[in-house]
Image 1: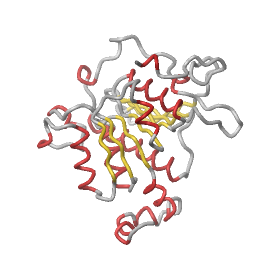
Image 2 (image 1 turned 120 degrees about the vertical axis):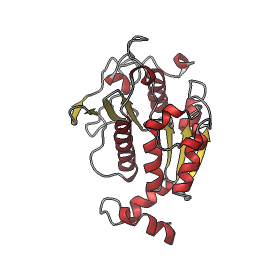
Image 3 (image 1 turned 30 degrees about the vertical axis):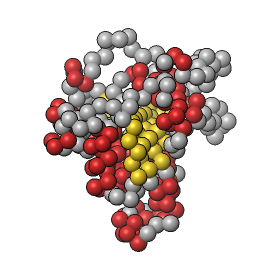
Image 4 (image 1 turned 90 degrees about the vertical axis):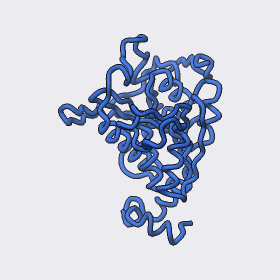
Length: 266
């Protein structure tokens, strides 16, 4: 049930035919876990809070530094030295006090991933390293939770939705993250954000697209990104979509799966 204040706050959503009152109520009842309150997590959290997602879980063990502020717009200069999870929570509640924020000041790993993910309806991964992306993907499959995952480069980014625990309209298993990227690149071959740099506004664009996909997933309208990878080239301002399908050899939901728990991530 939406209060009179909420009806006014979300009025521009409610008048949308594809959202309406039922869609806004679905957003209010949803619980979304966001991995990382950094470049991608910042716009994700702001827009999901503004949209009225009822509960936002934030997983981040890092602190705010001056170099973060070029792109992590949920934090401000006075927040330097504070926990990112706490800084993000304060900004969310200032924007929308109707949102419940749960802070997890920990690093997601094989020992806690299933417990953190299991209580949520949807997971958004804005992490900045391959190890965490594979861990989150594996954990979401095992916990039977949908995942929206994105990656950010210097002037490029990508975004997809994973529902590997479900089947498509033809009755076939949906692809996993490992169908798209079977193995992480060798250590040291992909420079970090600190080493290579990143265009701050691009983080805002991609993070906003993640939030939009999350809203679409929760409300249930349009065509989602399961089996589709959206790629952004900021230099040419070009958007392209690559279709991908399940690899029968993938170790998660392939014909002979070998990943049945998170022991490889411990």
